[in-house]
Image (tube, rainbow, N blue to C red; front, side):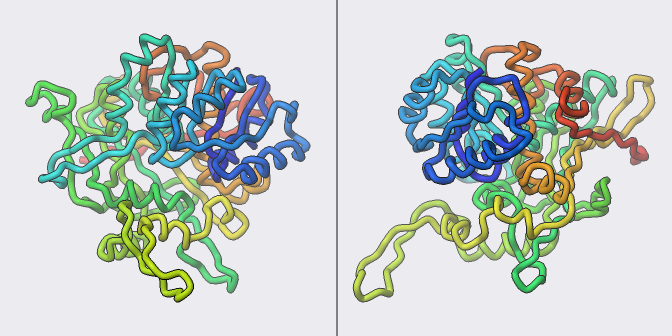
Length: 438
């Protein structure tokens, strides 16, 4: 296996650090529009004493917005698998570039949605991943696989859902992804500061777009899978969810997320939801950004105040917000706490009795920093595509077309993730029985 990782930001860097301790691939090309950033990742991997065969890692420059450039780089290095580790704006060119290169493809976030033009808080417009699934026939015809949504959420959450469907439940009432954390970032003065632990660009996209919910009854009434999806206002139906791992209760709200678009395609459930633990401060900041129009991606004209440089430049307000906040990859040393990703599954157990289970994965920031030099949110995202690549390398997972993680047997993935190193990745997951709600 010869891997091209497009993007050497926080997640891409963590992918390299995790993969460096595994033997299943022959080459890993770290590529970024900023060559120096890719070179820093490779240098860190080469210098780490636990890296196996660090000569397998090389750095390269690539423009992720240019499908032809992705194709050319993949062909130059004889790449068999392209892992997309850039933000969702670049999904389609990297996706198309991998197909043109004759390589398999993985991503951790899917192609962007576009709200319904007249009823955004009732009906979906173009949904997450829709433009990728529309090209599934091309991938089947080429004999290639695009494994989409293979991060942590989406990704591990979808693997949990498949495991619950296969082994824990005879009937599922709801697959409810629930994500929360108790992370705190300290400023130079030692006081907590607003500093998102993941890409603010992606966070704004997820949290301010109309959230999507899927219901089987709606799909059945419409006679189509697509008829089951509908949208609601941002921050809809707040609930307090008690997270394990010492995190505790966190207020969660509906946000737009890929699981709701993936799980109904492959699994039988009556309802699919995603709620994110944002907290009051984060929600307030996002509302303010939206009110001021700073969440917009379309460039606006900004007139320079510098007399030596008169005239206007055009900039994306959201890009300005991202530029003003610290890079999430740099926050690890200033961050404390843990993050939890998981799926709350309700329904009827295999014994015929009502059951409610939370399958989850908790990562403590101090642990991920000590062992990998990566903050916990990006590390938790990065480990899952590496596990998937290893299963694809061994042939344990194999398929063609555009598929989500639910399309594959969950047991080998969960076993490899949890098994102690060196056989596995030494990152255990949990299954928490919860009282069945009336």
